[in-house]
Image 1 (cartoon, rainbow, N blue to C red):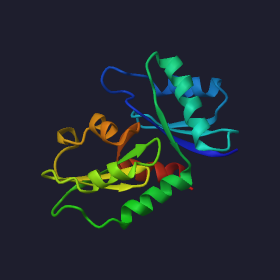
Image 2: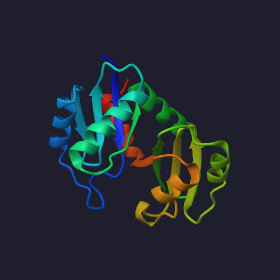
Image 3: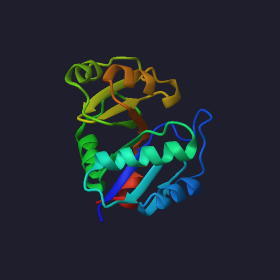
Image 4: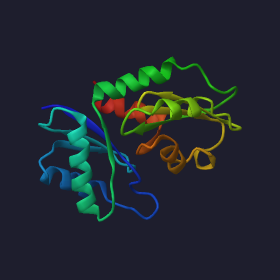
Length: 179
């Protein structure tokens, strides 16, 4: 059965809490196999008879929205796609001088060209951005909680549903569930 990695948006933040054990059980009851989670921020591994990411994302979102009682968007990638994102990120030279930290926003579809051009020219103090297809790489010398490129702003600029992950979390997911 094909394997998928779901990045859930806005789980266990802002009063939208769900226990990972309950989340896993809801997905198992819905027919997903080998359901695993990584940390509390909504990173989920599943097996599904579905052959493409789109229907998997729709079903995970439907199941978890019903289970949690609030909207739970799911952005789904195959393990090979996650590995490809990491290769693309690693190919991007440092965007800032000095010590910085990188984050990846996963989007539910390719970022439109106009939005990509705007984001690629992002020039806020201590923040730079590069669009990599359906992902957005952000590099910061400030704490993520202080960024001007919030998820709400990113979604407004791109017209896409997005969810951020610290690059170290994406690497850990790749190591744990990678292709």
